[in-house]
Amino acid sequence: DDALKNPTKRRRKKDDIDLEDQIDDQLARLKVAMEKACIADNEARDKGMAATHKLKLLPQVTALLTRTSVQDSVLDPETNFLQSVKYFLEPLNDGSLPAYNIQRDIFNALAKLPINKDVLLSSGIGKVVYFYTRSKRPEPGIKRIAERLVGEWSRPILKRTDDYKK
Amino acid sequence: PRDKGLAVDATGLDKDALDDMEAIFGNGEDYDWALEQEEVDEDLEREQQ
Image 1: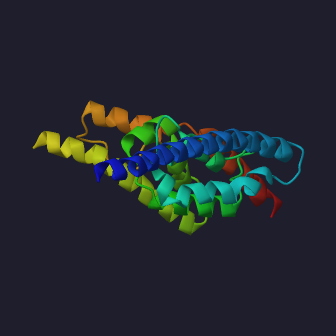
Image 2 (image 1 turned 60 degrees about the vertical axis):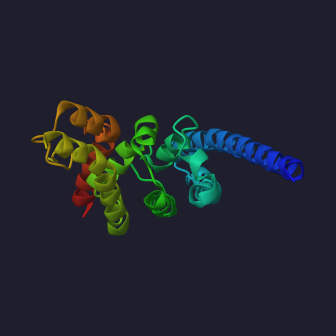
């Protein structure tokens, strides 16, 4: 009986690993494309043209951020996908914010992800989210999510101090 | 002038927690250039009105 069960079991495991590798490749490729899009958008802005490169990639980025089956890879501090997400949210060279759709889709996705301290430290995404709480430019809805995220992300760190005191 | 630093009350935090907070959310200066640009743009708009 075991001899019959095992091959399929092993196969499934191998398939899982293949799938994980595939996703890591996909994430790595998308990261490169995202960073290029950020540079291209800044160049477009400098020339007085519309910045559209990030917007074109946004559906792909949102799809990966919201797919629960790839969450482990997306949140892996080594893959550091959230670092590229940070670049997407950063203000452009002229100080303007990225398109509203980018802000809305990414902030909504971030609000649903279980983001821990390790990925915060490696990605630096907390810095840009904190910037959105300070800037006057984001829509109130975006600012609310940013404020909530800063609260959620700092809670475990502040709580540790409380525990220590007790 | 906009207040600098973190949005939380830092009194009573131990040094490790403060270091973590700064490593995660920055020292409050990371995007200051963009915030300063914001003020400049606002002043310009006001002048144009």
